[in-house]
Each structure stands twice: as C-alpha cells, then as structure tokens.
Image (tube, rainbow, N blue to C red; front, side):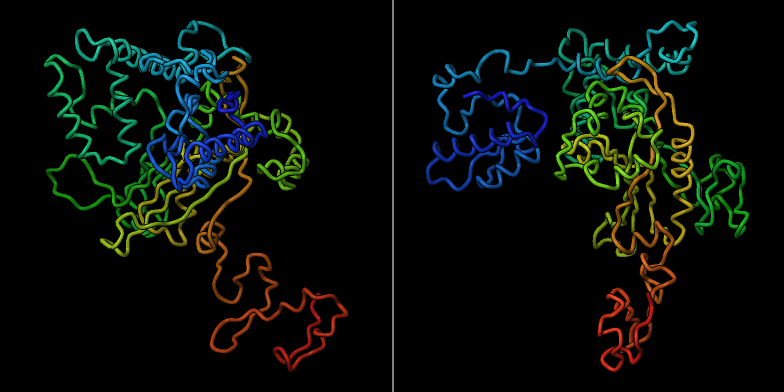
Length: 483
C-alpha cells in the first residue's frame, strides 16, 4: 500500500482524504470490535485513545505523524510491513540534529549576516545588518557553538535553552516552576556547565532572536498613551493625572500607573518570509489554491476578489499580506477575581493555506491590555493602527528566503472578528439602546415597547406592495411606508 499521502501537506487533497479512509478501514479490520484506538495525529502522537470517528476528524484537522508509515500500533506486523512500499528508506523522515535546527533558526533570523558590511544597498540585494544586530548575531552564534558542559556533543547552550523554553510554553509551565526545574537540571549536570540559573537569564540569551515587546505607559483614566509626541510627559494633558505612582523619595526608579504591552507587527510579518518553513506558503492563496467555487479559504469568496478588483496594485504582488483582527476579554483568574478582565488583540495572516492560517503558531498577539478598556480601546489600539497605516502606505523592506531577494511588504486588514459586545468596543458603535443595529445605524426603527427597547421596523424589508405594510393594529399601530 502506497503511503506517500502521509507526507502531503495539503490535507484537503483527494489523495490525503482517500489515505485517511484507507487507514480507518485498516484500523477497523485489524481491531475488530474496538471502540477506541490510538490517534496518530500530530497532536495526540499515538499516546491518546479516541473513537475511530474522532481519529478520522483529528487526521484531517491536525495531520498524521509524518514518520508513522508502519502502522504497528494499529495491528500491522513488522515483517509484513517490511515488504510494503511504505517502508522504503526515501519515505522515512531523516532525524535532524537539534543543534542543526537551532543553527537554521539563527540563519532564518539573520539571513544575510555574512553580507559584506561595506556592500552598497540594491533593490535585489539584502540590506546589510547594522553593528548592533551583528553583535546580537555573534552572541547567538557563540552560544550555539558553546558546549553545554565540556565533552557534551548533543547539546549546545543555545540548543538546551531553546528546548527547555519550548517545553515551558508547550506545557504552560509557570516561571516559578521553570526556575525550580532549571535549578535542578543545573545541579544534576557537571559543575562547569553553562546552563542559565533561572528564566530571566534564559530570556536574555534568546533576546537576540527578536520578536520582543514594548512597554508603553498609559494614563490611569485611559485618556491617552505616553507615546510618540507625549512620550516625555509626566502628567496626562487631559485629566492632569500623574503618570507615575507615589513612591518613597529614596526609590531611584519610577513605577508607572498603568502599562500596555505592544508587540510590533512588522518583524513578525517579516519573519514569515525570512523562514524557510513559511516563505513559500505565504503565496499559497494565489499560486497553489484551487479555484473551483468550493469554499476552503477566505480567498475563495467574493469579499477577497472584490478587494483585488478595488486595489489591483496591492493584489499584483501575492506576497502582500491580508490580515484579520480579533479581540475579546477574558478573566485569567477565574473565580479568584470576578472584576478583572484581560484583552489581547490578535492578528491572523490569511495568506497561509487553510491548514496553517488558523493554527495558534501563526496567531500574532499585537496588544495586551491588562484591564477592561471599555470605550477607550481606541487609545490602546493607536500603536497598532499607526503601524498598519504605515504598512498599507509605505510597506517595509523584507527579505524573501524562497527567492533570495528583497521586496516591499505591504499589509491590509480585511476583517475584524468579534462577538457583539466586543464589536461595539472596536468599532465605536454602541450595540445597546435605540440605535443598536450596526447595519441600519441612524436609519434604525426602534421604540419603547413592553418595558424594553424593541426594533419594530422590520416590515420595511418586505416588498412595496405587501399586504402587511398596510396593517397597523396587528403591529405597532402604524402603516409602514419606509423604503
């Protein structure tokens, strides 16, 4: 049985879907009467048991483990599998050394670090990095080449930190828990090891990989941000509230009243093209999408096509990014704090194929507001809006790893995705009261009826000669003449 379909990245392809049906049939035949089997999707990793129907759903959503070409955990005999086409050496993914993967990451972050520093800038030639970036590059390279302890060949300092931090994020480990285990590992290793002693030191090593965040002070009453032209002020010019808290005179550092965390969008969009894993996929919507009137991706619908017709210059380069923006509030403390609300604002790159664009790895958090902003969410959105305007008007020079050339990356927000209360906050249009309909706006027909605000103008959507337009007693006592 040919099992090359497992390697197919397009999980909507007929070859892949037929392969899943073959696997489900194989599992039923070799596990008669079983209601649950191991799930070989990338998320469950053959460690969780699911119903056969759920296994099929998981394989479509998450994909099968690419190295699972011998289905021994589902009843296949190894000696029988050895004669199958699926066990050929060219179908088995090679084992990649962890140190090599880290070096690939560094090359993705600094794709032109080896460029001559005196080279003149050209359109198709990467812009040489400045001295500060080159210093970061050399620090990362030093940690990537330094052994974790003398004689250790399997892990460098940088590889060990990347692996540990990846596990921390994947399994949602707190900083205190991570510090504890890091201290335990450091004690277990030889005394002359170079492992950081805590999370803070590990973060300093990884700072050179970029994608950090900025802290922007905000007015206590959400009037404004101390940002750009107001960055040097100590009091809010609107409400005269102090920027900093009252502390003892002996304290050297000032504590701000309120802080917003902003994660710049441009470096994250640039990284999608600087990485070998995503540079080609960012053009999928135009180069590999099948246009057969089947809805598989936002690019299949009329809104996307109408945008292309309206802005042909933007649509001419498939590398320009189409974005979606979403936000909502949640309480991370549960019942411990009934009044707290955190509002993250996410951006989604819809250039990616459908099996990637909604994965959490590609969801970019741009703003983190640590309390309910209410009607002042536009104050906190200002850095993001400024950056989006610049990306639409001027763009940013970006290196495309797939072509080895520079290009001007532009971006546009095509959708916002919110529930109704969050819609009111982001759009600035109240979804409560007499003009709550964001479609009708000022033309809404509403009134006080039965102790609440009711919207009784729905008869205007009927044909002009409909009999219900003339009826008054059956409705609100008026005939409907509105167009």
